[in-house]
Image (cartoon, rainbow, N blue to C red; front, top):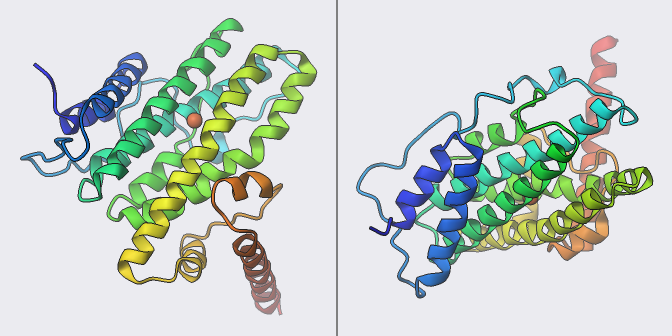
Length: 285
Ligand SMILES: [Fe+2]
């Protein structure tokens, strides 16, 4: 018997087995493609489940971000740890996309279709990166990892506007900043296979941030909210920054941020940082 999209998404989200989670994500995507417009069965009789953690395997061991050991890129173990970190981001990204599609079912059907497609793409990214890790004799679960990405999903589970503002537009967009630098280091090492995987990931991630931007604008318009002012307020409220380290302006523009918005954000964050600096000085005196 064919499962409904809602039941499939719930099973995928709760699955603790990476292979099963990936295969259920691909099945959900196929079901979306095969189902005509406006015919996706998203209703469930039970309440949407509230859980602190989405399904994940017993390993990797989850630790606070400060406890994730940094390893030297030049050693074999350090290199595997880097590949593992990317693998873990992709694993979390599957859960984030599944959760958006599962949880926010009062959104238009196109929203569900977008996030199911993204879940399938993230599953593909995870599978490709895991193969790269295996090629070096390691596997997913061999290093400790943190749960920062999922924590933000949990904090924003009650409102799709918050989720779209803070997960794709802040945390996932960060991937666009760091990937080119990582790719060039990996290219110097001569690992062309991993570079090819990163190229696929990077190209599709631009599309994922774009989807987040689209639905953020949609929800702001629906509620009569000014998107840029609201975004600045949310960054302050959740103590998040975009302009820390290198920011890939070109990729962010491709993903739907305007140059004007990025300049406003940079000024805003500089003034927040100088406010913090002034408060610290005032406290010391
Ligand atoms: Fe990804």
